[in-house]
Length: 260
Image (cartoon, rainbow, N blue to C red; front, side, top):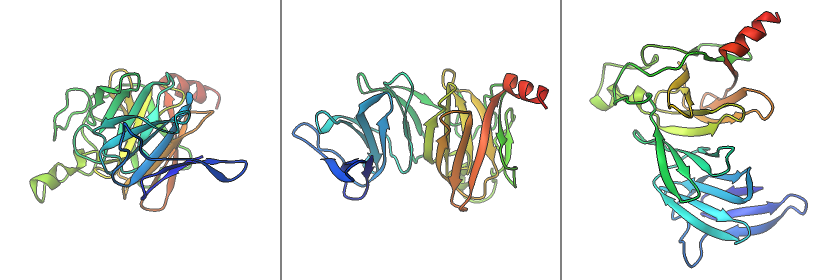
């Protein structure tokens, strides 16, 4: 188990003895974090690799065999559970609490960013209404929708766009301000949510197209988790609710309907 926080150390605990196995921060080559850490994540495809991110705009990469930092990436401003690894073992996703370049993909083999995922879809610009949407993927609530809405093919940005207030307030619904970002465990899908528009969005990993939007959430999304054995995912928000959905392709939805 790994944990981290205000003191900028990453602690690794032995689950059997309940004691600290490693305590990592810096070494002679890397200075480690200079501000509090908000996310620490094991690479499930490389058990010796851990990444952490926080307010200092860096991602620190650790190797348990070296018992310390082995690489550092400058850029992501991580304020929540917004680091994840793709199943190839070297592609890392980061989500940042900011207006632009919020979803980034990194190659851990060289420590370089190779692509952004635009919050409003490929070739979108700030304040643009039209979003690039892929057909055929739809999130379905497992326990009823409540007041929130979802759309797998909207033609305009969802719900919270306002024409009153300052210029910055006017475009606030388009800002991602990400707290949570993850890969789907069973599909080539990137999922993210945050505070800018109080939305969860699903993106095609290869094209960056928006697959689905869950909108009209009353408060910011703070965390999410994808199921290990199904297409279900859950996310929690400031309104103290956990919402569970299933991300289904058109073929899966048709097959499920045929069984009813």
